[in-house]
Amino acid sequence: MPGNLTGMSHRIASIALALIVTSVVSPWGIAAPAFAQAVPDPHDDPHEELVKPPDQLPKLPRGERNRNLEFLFGALKAAPDEASAKSVEDRIWAVWAGAGNETTNLLMSRAKKATDDKDYELALRVLGAVIEIKPDFTEAWNRRATVYFMQKDYGNSLADISKVLAREPRHFGALSGLGLIMQEIGDEKHALEAYRKALDVYPRLKGVNDKVKTLKEKVEGRDI
Image (cartoon, rainbow, N blue to C red; front, side, top):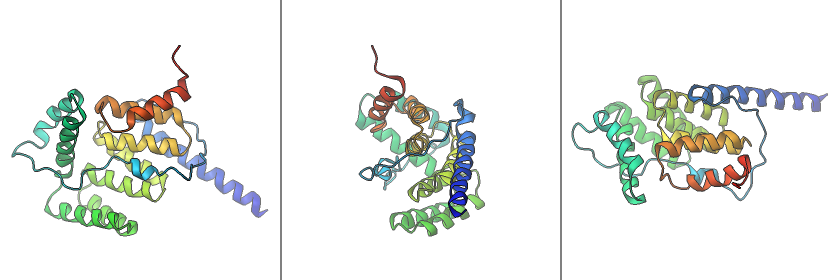
């Protein structure tokens, strides 16, 4: 009997996660994936592959924030090399991070320190407070999704990613994070789609082209 209960609990958890995935991917045109449990490679560390903001954000000229975000995304897509793309990427992160206010910015700094110190529970509490104060602050949702990912809490991470992409469909960090989660749970088809969407926004996003190439061969086969 205990074995049956354990098996049932695993099936319920799998169904719940599949439903969360549906809510994340459906709004931007991907059909709901069938859940598959992945067997993680102990030599892989997906945390190292997360797309995160730089430790030191550049200072933006007055008036560059939301007014020039469209221009920055255009520059990101057209960047001729990795160095220029990274410069534009950092400016986009600065726009996203600067969309709060003095109080939320202070709390975000505390959340970053807690995350860097691997005090994930504190980071989650602080980020939860930021979201409560300013629920339209997209980057707070993204940072919390990242912390959940670091804890391997993929259900809550996916739920927060859905909030990020609903507010900013071009958020390449959230899109690449979605791809990592899809890979972790064994859904290579939707991982490939998430990575392709990230590359459509940011063609020089580090490491993602290689992931697309590998997954494309697995999902779609080699080109003839």
